[in-house]
Length: 136
Length: 136
DNA sequence: GTGAAATCGGAACGAATTAGTCCGATTAAC
DNA sequence: GTTAATCGGACTAATTCGTTCCGATTTCAC
Image 1 (tube, chains in turn brown, yellow, green, orange):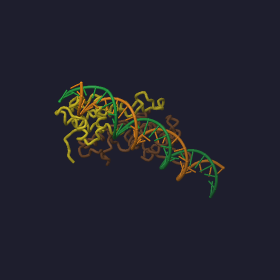
Image 2 (tube, helix red, strand yellow):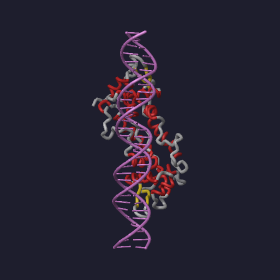
Image 3 (cartoon, rainbow over the protein chains, first blue to last red):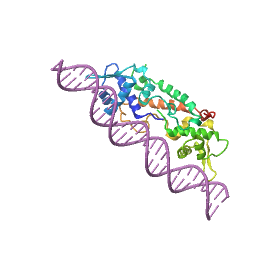
Image 4 (cartoon, rainbow over the protein chains, first blue to last red):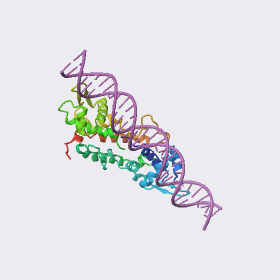
């Protein structure tokens, strides 16, 4: 019931990147300096976020990162899913049987719980987490 | 964003125990047989649940477990907290600074998220999870 | 056109938490 | 008082996560 540190760092990184949305491209090293996180860690987080389509990467000299979508259109659920995969409390939903499949009366109820949690996280936009002066 | 297997097993175990609520004491071995989980694992889960006050243990020959509270009064949040501790997505809320304390603009928003998730889980009683036994 | 620099992307190593297992202390019944 | 069955805690092994490093790609400058 606790998201991984990578996901936590991803939220911080996205929050920092959202502040440079208007300024164009930002390098991963610069994000590391601003957030105080280790540079390699930020690189790994950025890789996952880029693969998920939340960030747009521009390679080469003078390149950098930029938000692929407006900050208001990115929710906490998107960031968590980008780093940790689908929002699922249990692993028995995607093939990995929990060895009690035959007598597991709670399994039918997990999708409902998962969806409830996902909705709760989807209702939190990046703008709220970033704490920008323009929250509207 | 995924609860540990122990918590998953705890839910299954509590669900199985709720069926024996009227029958009185149930041994951990019997719960293991019914759920199909390894007996030592069930013992570990039962230990945590008992320590949290969700189960009442009776030692000695002929002893066993029984629900400390009615099934309707036990929520999914109670079980998760019993096994995994407080519902907190991030570890930076209880002293462990995340090394970006000075520039972490998202930290003030985590308690709200945690409370939202906790409420979502608290709204799911054990009776709903137990449901009717489905024989596959 | 060529060279060089800077960037992201993926892979490998190490550490930490977790899952599983075992043995001992306690307790009730006989 | 003895026996037997139970829970409780501690140890070991495994998986996953976090961190770090190196290579492929791309752009700018000359």
